[in-house]
Image (cartoon, rainbow, N blue to C red; front, side, top):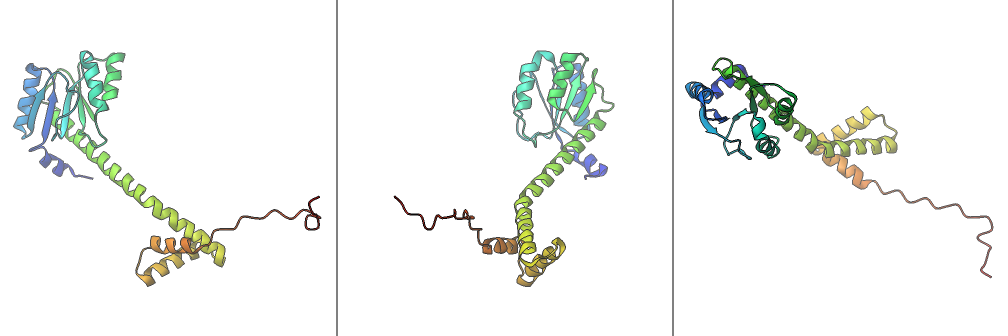
Length: 214
């Protein structure tokens, strides 16, 4: 997990897209972000896709921009930058739209410089945690075929040699170390060497051998 000092250092040069009407509140936020070293771009109305090279999105959630906001959210990939939602009031329609944006943090209006740094850090930390989790998930998914082969090979060893699961696992390990290869490779050899089971033949019917066609 990234430490707080590392996240603080990241703020300098952080590319922040501010999707907000051009008004006094936006000017305050833009000035504050630039003061702490961020690279800032401002857009309005809500774009339907994000530009490239964006690290954090500050998004004003407006019901009048519902269609564009929903299209924007649908275009985001799983590694998209975190969204900080800017919300002016609460009602069922607004809350539903905020939930659809899946924000990493929420800021209430009127916008003020105080608290902005904290929300940036929280959003960035949440994004990093999600990226780390996705990387770990892909690693586990890539290992699944190997794990399945090893489990099958252990089952074959247990059946052939009447071994327990731990003994079968240790045998695979020894073979892999002796041949200087992976357990998956040894497991594949064991599976390939196992002949497929022959289909069972139905028992002959009584008198079938002596019967002859009419």
